[in-house]
Image (tube, rainbow, N blue to C red; front, top):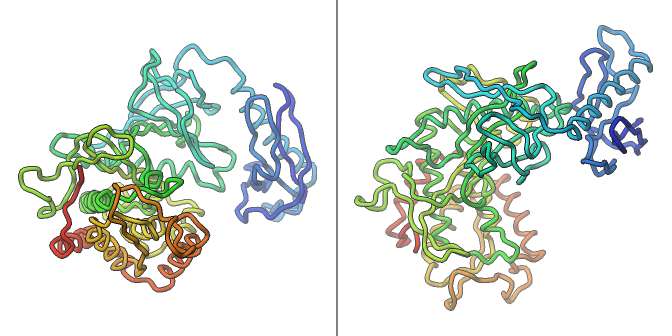
Length: 476
């Protein structure tokens, strides 16, 4: 295997660095003209600093070129193909180095995506690269990068005057790899499904419980998505709250309220548009501070006079108790059933199909509770909350078949540490905890219980056990 690492030492220069062979992804990126098969390597394998950033790593070999029409490609064709990829990557670097355009680069418009749904789009040039200070539209300017992952970046969106907005810009990384990752197709699915979710509004006319999705950025030439405007949620992911470094957060009312709200939102979305999330875990549920209308089926409100309203919570760092709403984010793996918009959704890419196969027959309720189980197992709780903790344990066992460990102390507030137990394997942050987490995951997969429990069924179980466990939702 011959590998190449692309990097730039100055504008206009391209360097080639030979790297050691490694096992490559089985899915190739085929060049449209040369039939060149290109695989993606890890940045760790070939990491070269550039003036402005990192270039994507590509590797190719003459032995990996699959013939088209039974014609064997020559070494010269291979070299030409590699050079074209290098030139395209160098072009991306030169764009990043170039001065910012004085005028907005996006052209606003609308597309009819479903009956009575005209979705906003922003058409951008094929060489579009989101960077701070770029004028996207007359209304929005790209702000600082605030997060992201392996395949995408998330940047703030400011007004034309530089003021902050309640919107964010999600853009793709590594367009060359979309033939493998299918990220452009996934982004289009997320946008179309998000437009359907936007139709689920409460009496106040606003969407609650889900992250709102706005305009989609479309490539002017290919008409494929390269970015998406999303709502900025005012809070942190529940995973960050629960899995803090010391793992001391132990407010069981917070967890029960999260389950109640999320199950209510999922039931409403399933009833209205046939929505399932497909990747529900604590990282994809976020806190949102502010009064909101909750989507709960009839008969599941905790009181008649304050029906379907977010409860008050005083979380670490709060001076006073505030309304807390939970919102579901990230629809990259979501699906629609029994919906007219289903025909307009592009087919899921290959990697997405493999992902779905792994999680086949694992519903949203099961996946969320399985993630909660491995996150809070072994935690120490206030003794006064033992009944509610037992309810959470019972719900987790009912759905996943896993029984988590719990300990109780009478003194103090909701902050406790699981590191003072008598036995080392009880340590909440120690090696024993990692063993227990692995055991629970294996058990949940091997001895599957209610993997397809519907959200309404989980709510019914919680409602039916309120008196037994003396549960009162919300906390102040």
